[in-house]
Length: 386
Image (cartoon, rainbow, N blue to C red; front, side, top):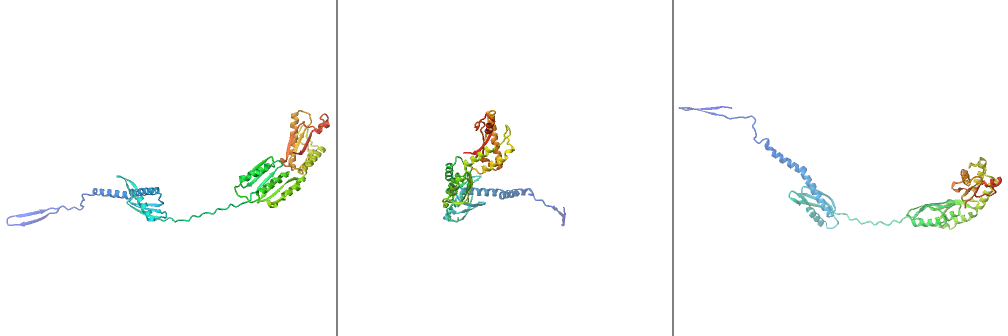
């Protein structure tokens, strides 16, 4: 507080005037700070709209325009929304570009959005950018001609039936092949595979020749590899020349490889020689047993050597005298026949060529009333199975 005095002197009186004023170092604003709060609120709402509400609205407009144009079969590339402006990128159909742009723009502007006042048109401004589709001349593929190839096979004749393995071009050919084999053999095993591909010529001629020749053999195999037919097997002496002639006949009908034949003795000759060997010497067993005596090994070796020269399946028969029950003799004769069969296998005779059967006392060849007769009846017979 400062004081200022002024005196005025008159003739009659003196007047003294005093003036006072207030001085502060920090003046105060009446509206601060609460008056700025509404401004901050408005700024927050503005920023919220810019960074949160506006993007959602733009995304919604963009999705609605895209959905509508897709439903109208417009070939869209992309749709961009920026505020109330929408830019549509699409591919034309090769016709009038301006007409297509106008049509797409009209459709896009018709898009409806939800507002507080109800559904309203969304975009206020639509731009259409149209890319013209390139028209390609369709390429017509030339039909590819299927290439024919060889269909190879392996047929096996085991002395009784035939097994068919390998490929055939189609189901019809397979049925024809199997039917042809069934006319020659009582048992046919079909393991053929249908390739559904064209076969090179002469496939039918090959399998026909193979089956016919195998039917003349006692046992054998026919192989066709890369279109070349080869045959190997056992043939009786009286059929050897005919078999070779059949193989080489009509050489142009199929490509031929080699024919390899092992000549075997005739069935009657083999049966006679088996009988002679077994009458001259006997396969001995331990008493009331199926165990072969070691003294019979030389005879078994000779029998195996003869079996290798003979065709077909060998039947080993067991016989007994009449001492003991029929059931016991039947069982013993079967066991002895089995024992001889098993003894011939290690000597080089294939198991599938050997069969065994016991007849017990049913087929005597001498009088069981005498020791000599009973000895003749206790025997092993080997013959070619018919």
